Length: 402
Image (cartoon, rainbow, N blue to C red; front, side):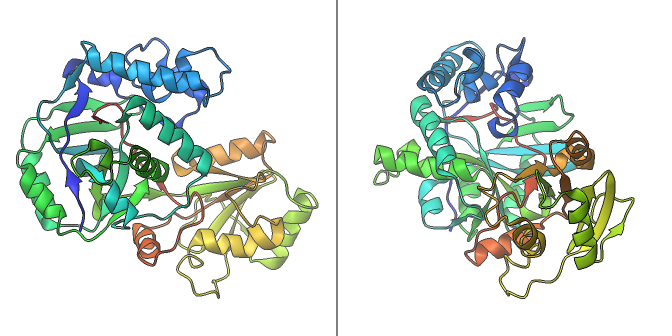
């Protein structure tokens, strides 16, 4: 059963929360982080993207970057703009995007649950990214950003959420992208811990590398035998499945064999490819393709391999186009394919094809939360970049130290 762990949060003084809170580290690159943090000395980007405080062009894996992140976090904790809670707490966190609310629990979860598959994964992790996150956590002696988990809806948890959101919030802000972020402290942490003790599994939605890094940190520090050691826990926001929304994760291809026109003719010969004015698929099993300045729609063949993974749209795409027509057998490592999150819209697909960076784009139908759970429950892994969760959590509101 799932463990949620109250923790002593490091958090902004309320009057500075909007200045401190920032986007997660992995939705922007170093250049974008520099731009967002310009003129914002309190931005949490100085902690999660510390290379922005070093000379431009520095490798983000340079020793100086990790040291700078630890220095910046220590200064923040010791400075006048942070609060270190005296008592462990649990929190309710609500995001509102385009009028749609998503409300969950901000808590620490257990490394032991991750290691024993109470927390189930659906993606492979990359060693280089694991190494980077592990080192940041070790040098800062903190988990600076939460991951996103989901769980099957639980009435006891929902009741506690409903009771909590009727109280005065700790924070209530609107980020520059228009997403609202509101947070409350839970009054009865024991009841919430007990409620999650009846939840059989948690599912990773976003943050696989941070989960794995937390496990590696506990292993490195050899804290597994001490249930009181805070390194055995890491922060997460846990959302009921009914609240979750997944956007498509679209694909773009750099080069096609034989040239664009030949490839387009081959697609038209093999599939019922037809022009469309709608760049977004309207149902599962359909993809839209942007090539030579026009949008087309096609239905992908059903998978005959029987696996729940093969039945996903991303699996059917691999079987029908990526492998047989493009020779892309491993999208994680093949340099001919890239991925664009659905939040950027289909106009971004048109832009990167029209400017010549890519030769064609594939607009996907979103994976459902039920498909994610089915894959995780079966012990399988999804192809890379199968899900894009939105809205994103704000970093810097609650930090877990050890």
